[in-house]
Image (tube, rainbow, N blue to C red; front, side, top):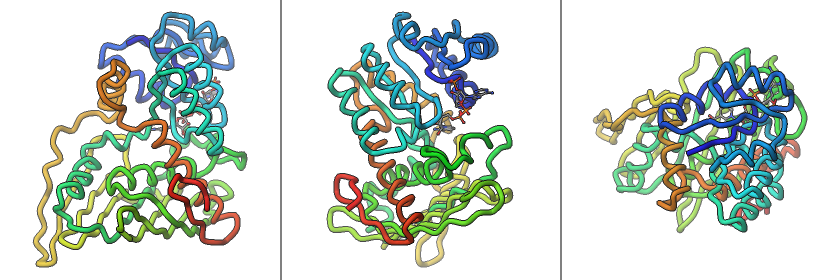
Length: 335
Ligand code: NDP
């Protein structure tokens, strides 16, 4: 598959390009807003060439575009790509607003191309194992979910993410992943959230605690999220509490296929769950995206999934701003 990279970003260099190479895909061109930097980026990262012209890049015989500019610029990249008839993999969050995100998904559907959201955690063997334990009934009915997405943001990423403009901040960076992963693991929707944020020295708001409610198909479950840029010594974790058993995945909210899943029953029996092959998350996701582009199935995370995760994250933002509980409608609208 031939790719245009829209955005000369860190994530493209550190994760996507190595994964594309491993799969034998061809990164033809990278688009950046500074021509010299884009050219240097292309040389350094083994991309055919760099340009500032998105139109030129999309006319270079590419099948797909990967959009990883800063969040407020994703929409422009996606609209250009689908307008040129390219399949598109867009980074999360799709956009700073739901209207923009929905318009992106509608444009891709109208053009008949695949649009996917890069919620890479769906490709984690640890997260997939948790989903399997819910789906095959091992855990029984889900009573609650607790997520610790607690990192120390690397120095090199402490730029626009820490700003106060739309599209920045811990919620659109980390909470949006949590919402998607919770939906993926449990099959439930986030119905209600209440959030508290704190400032721990990195930016105006760099850690949040969210209490929420999950539901769907008559289910009613609790949700706890702890998302932070500021925690140097924490392990990330994703825990699902069920009526028959509970499962705890440690080091689960990660870019690597590491981590363990332990199943625990009331008799205190603990079993280490076999998570299967520990393949690179981005390789797994890009392979599935290419399959979807070839007409075989859906990508791991669709554009619509990206709209849903954004709706949850924006509900958390609204709760932080108003100090109130925020309900979400069934279609992801803030009720
Ligand atoms: P970066 O800051 O590395 O890149 C974003 C944009 O900033 C680039 O497209 C580039 O603009 C500009 N930029 C980057 N470095 C420089 C520089 N040295 N000088 C001038 N401009 C620069 O962002 P990330 O890679 O961290 O994130 C990009 C997107 O990917 C975000 O949407 C983020 O949420 C998402 N992301 C997803 C992850 C995942 O695993 N799913 C992980 C990390 C990020 P231009 O291209 O116009 O030149």
